Amino acid sequence: MKKVRKNGISWFLDDHDGLEAMVEGIVEDEETRRSYAIRDCGARKVFVKFFLEQGASGCIRNRLMPRGKKEYALGKRILSACVATPLPMGYGIGRAGSFVIQEMIEGETFKAAFDGTLPQEPLVDALVLFLKQLAACGIRHNDLHLDNILVRAKTLYLIDLHKARVKGSGLDLKDETANLTQALTMIYNEMTEDLRRRFFEGYGRSDLRQTVEAHLRAQWKKWIESKKKRAFSDTSKLAAKGRRVYVRGRESGACGRFEELIKKDRKVRVERWSDHIRKVYTGRRRLMRAWETWAALEYVTLDIAPRPFFVEMPPLLGGGYVAMEDLGARGEELDRFLDRHYDAMDLDRRRAFIDGLSRFLGGLLKMGVVQKDMKGCNVFVLDDGFRLLDVEDIAFFAPNEEDLTRMLVQLNNSVPARIAAADRIRFFLKLAHALPFDRKRLFRAVAEGCAGGEIVYEGASGLKRESWEGRQPGSHGPFCRRTR
Image 1 (tube, rainbow, N blue to C red):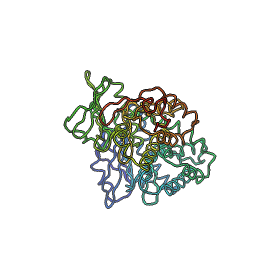
Image 2: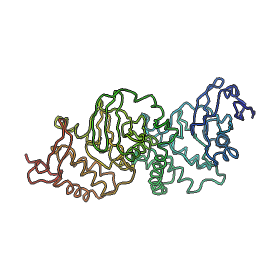
Image 3: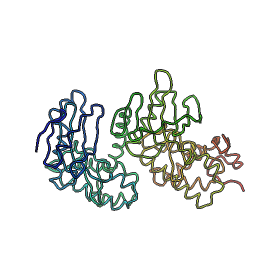
Image 4: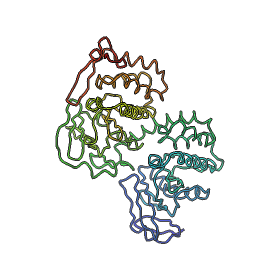
């Protein structure tokens, strides 16, 4: 290993062609918590990561065990155990933080591969073998989400090692549960029951399933709360600049001109600009809650709401706002969509639509994502799926039977009364099938909750008010068939 000093940084470099010349132009970034660069090094590309240290504890860590050095050392040790990870090539220690230099892996994250077009069964099998290999080698990663596993060809690579531990005595039950829980957090709710069974049987520990599922619920809540706390900070996903916080990669978006006012009430003002929608909040707390939710969704890569560009916090007087993508040209709200298209749908199209909507909402509920204001106007219908609107009313918790009853009453009372009872029942059964509730009791509770309630929704031609009594004389609920 060769030691050189460049730009105030002490570099410790392995013997690789072009490495010393490559570090010539590297300087410390004292504004960003993590920064990354891909650089040419001889005939190959390398990945350079910088860890900014802050505060007294960060200063001490940078002197005693810099994170760049730790990741370099762990990479060497993990490679020696025959676990695939990018080849460590050197590290650097500066005044404000440390660097690690690694081989560049041209691949995609496991999460991206799982969400892509590849068959999921072989990917799950590969993940099982990879996790078994980590257990056999005594490796507890401590941040094993699926963006920290890269896929290239048929090989999985472990990355972001600075929190990892290699335990010579092997992993105990707590360590194994931690690895499994972290690895499954981002995909478990998207996995079918067959895939879940395949995973645990392939891992050889079906007895761990209940324990892991309990940890997944707790991990999800803890993870979401931690990401919310970083919603206004400079992170790998977000860039804080003055009163704005941008989603990284979208800094150049949302800079068009004002076109029209869409909506205004005492809580929000919604404006259409030429290249985005701007939602202005009169209350600072509501704005912060909305952006914290958007940030959490970005971290967990859940594409269930309009994608945000940035938030601008309010000055002393005035409203702050979120700039988000404009979905208007690609679809419309559920209540308007049904009012406009329902009567022209044939049986097959109705069933396909109901099944798609129930899968979307059911998947979110199983994941612990709840729209607390589940009106038809807060579900957006696209050609290729659905999105939730009013992000400030999205919450992360496992709903109970009372929560689900309230949501279904709201939804039934905010779409056109003429939606057939058979279609409402089909939606209810599809949605409730995968949820751990008594369906008969839930069905009765929803019917009773709707009875006597007014139906209010935005139709294709404006606000409409209807009643269950008007739908069928003597009927007071959504699940009774209309009189012919």
